Length: 316
Image (tube, rainbow, N blue to C red):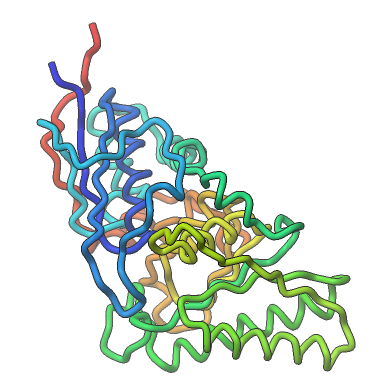
């Protein structure tokens, strides 16, 4: 019997690799060999979705364009293969399995199967482990008629940024010589927020450090900066999300120490925000929850995965 299972992952870096993690957790429990194909044909407001595979070290999965008899499809990338949906699927095969166990699998296995290449590791700024990571995002994440689960209205975005800067102000005032890593897909927005943070430090007569990242790319890797930013964020002691929801910084937190600050709790649509779907895995605003009813409510509009895997593969 063929026990290879394949998946094709789409969209941006966060969606792709979060689906890889969910897919791997399924294959691990069901005894299938995971084969992943990356769709690199997409073009979005923030750029293309071709992330050079040489920038990663993938362990325990085969990365190729191969198809297999068994497959998993994720109709809602990063959500259909999120922790609760994966738990629901595996629960039908393993009645004693717990949501906490699957959540721990996501957190622990992700770091094993997705690691930075040597070229990425060589570019980590010194002392990055003691820095606060700030992920700024605008582009397609702001409009007044989008999905309330992951898209900001203009007003919500203003609220989120103001509260993020309040936290930065508090950190600068209360901590000695804090350091920050600031990443964004928009350089102008990054420069604007950087100047505001430097001004906060100056007004309070405090020394801070804004970490510099060497983005030189002599081998012309596709989307080198995005991959480097994501792994740099993953090394920070905590991530401050400057957007309602982004799988990019969720992924970075998952590959790091699992601490993230999300400011959508100051908006009226926080109840629907997809950040909650990761609250069993990540420490979001200093808390986790494994409440089955809560996660069922958050994912009630998330499509189930599509798969023809109907039984556990038996090696005997």
